[in-house]
Length: 360
Ligand code: SF4
Ligand code: FES
Image (cartoon, rainbow, N blue to C red):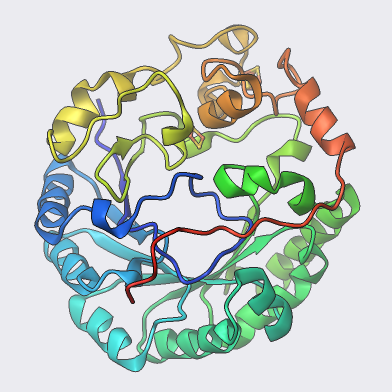
């Protein structure tokens, strides 16, 4: 079996923001449940030994952990390409210096919108947008490649062209325009977040125009809302094929939403090595490859392209993780997608929250 390319290290669920489109699970882990520094250092060494090439430090907000620079330094020393995915509101000069010293290779910074008022309302953090703009300048000033990430939803989808302009102004080398994906809190808020088809088409045109204008000088990534697609995304590049995800409390998952699935006992790094989990656990084997696939996937030419779509979305929308992703127009359950798109009201969004106070 090929080794995983990437380790997604969800080092904490704590976060100073409370975005309604957060795709983290409803059951957020508290600080007391998080893995300690020593365990993360072992996991990082095991990942390098297993053949992992990239490590993505994410959360929640990874800067909420005081040991984040220690973890990044260990990963860099182990030969891993290190990426920090952050909201940036805590990225002070001091923290930036520590990250640079630790050997960070890349930072992905999220922005909620283009104007402070709307952005701060979306993230639930007064003054957050201004701090993020300062953080972007610090990252670029330190010579660290910057990706700016905008999560797009009904409330901001009309401003995609302006988002891209802002990314250019801030000196990003990559701009990610990512429509919200409906997991965790975002699924709870789906009816209020889903853009209209007109908004989607206009956002897509803005991305295409920017790509033409930049000619590859700035990369513009685009994550479409798959509810509008006729075929599903190849979620995670296929279950257990390319990446593993370690949750804040040490569970090893094929994707960050897998804890929503029932009928699994996901192994923990507290009890097993990453190598054992990747190569021998039932959880990773269950939907790996194509042997598990039902019809119509089993006899479909796209099975080794999209791997039947997303197992977590199939479970969330049909109750069966082994079903064809209902996003696929060939799925017998595709009606649930059509019903969701036909019933887009405007309920108040529920902000993400965690019961524990922030310790940052
Ligand atoms: Fe993909 Fe299955 Fe749909 Fe074929 S039938 S496009 S394999 S989800
Ligand atoms: Fe779990 Fe797609 S998010 S398989």
